[in-house]
Length: 327
Ligand SMILES: NC(=O)c1ccc[n+]([C@@H]2O[C@H](COP(=O)([O-])OP(=O)(O)OC[C@H]3O[C@@H](n4cnc5c(N)ncnc54)[C@H](OP(=O)(O)O)[C@@H]3O)[C@@H](O)[C@H]2O)c1
Image 1: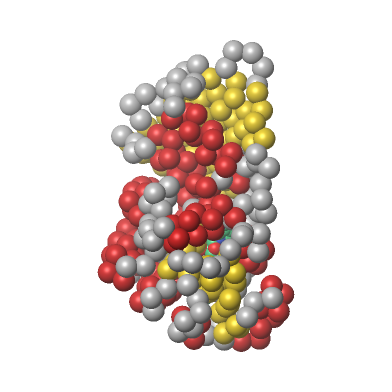
Image 2: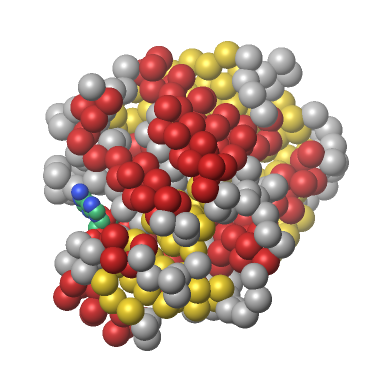
């Protein structure tokens, strides 16, 4: 693929704005179209970011031949239909996390991507964060010895929000686990792989969504302690403690700008200033893959998403988290 890569954004909520700002920081990326269910919202968004086309329906944007790749930024329950529609229209897709709400949805998406021969990736942006990549590479190189303990959390207070909004609404697959708990589970999977056993404890909100969840993932020689919640803040400093050294990831660890390594002697800090909010790195990965004609990223592959969603579903099953859309 030569020339600038032409992006469209589908669904113009909160994250769409952050993404559009970061897209503007990536060389050879151009936002050519945006689509909302509300035409005036699309026009206002397009005017704010200097975008060419503003569509009042998602389908219209998917028919636009000027769009190479679509960023799906709708609520969790809508990722499946919107990504399928985009891929069937021949578009490459970067879909917000979680790409589906259960393994069946994930499989349907990966099958469609293969059949349509389009690029597809779940937007798990932390996988491309330069500081995290450096720290995890050092862990995997064995620099601190075998990992014994990993701790990661993600929480913010949200129980006073609109109960019909995507965080607290079971019909939109709300709750903390799929929204933010996905990050600690992802980190444990990235660093340690598949656990031997999982233990879970969860609390539920009056709307029926899970509001707090604590997860222990057990490995032959290591334990991962993971937490997500919508009841309070948490420190969000992750720790990967190896037998002869500890990597401490600066808060908020999932979008970090540095980490410290402590072995013998004082901690050594490694700063990694971010470009933009940090979505720039996943955008660059999509562009690298498109230019090389790849249909998936080697860094966050289809198989990685499949495994992560298998883990999340098992955690959901153990915690009794059920969504009405699943029947
Ligand atoms: N990577 C990150 O750091 C990050 C951060 C926040 C959120 N996210 C993810 O991004 C996705 C969107 O989150 P958000 O915070 O941007 O949500 P949001 O503010 O609620 O926006 C979602 C947008 O989806 C569209 N939509 C289509 N059908 C809808 C429906 N039935 N109900 C509500 N909205 C509908 C709407 O756009 P139109 O009105 O324009 O059609 C809406 O503005 C989620 O998957 C979330 O997990 C990722």
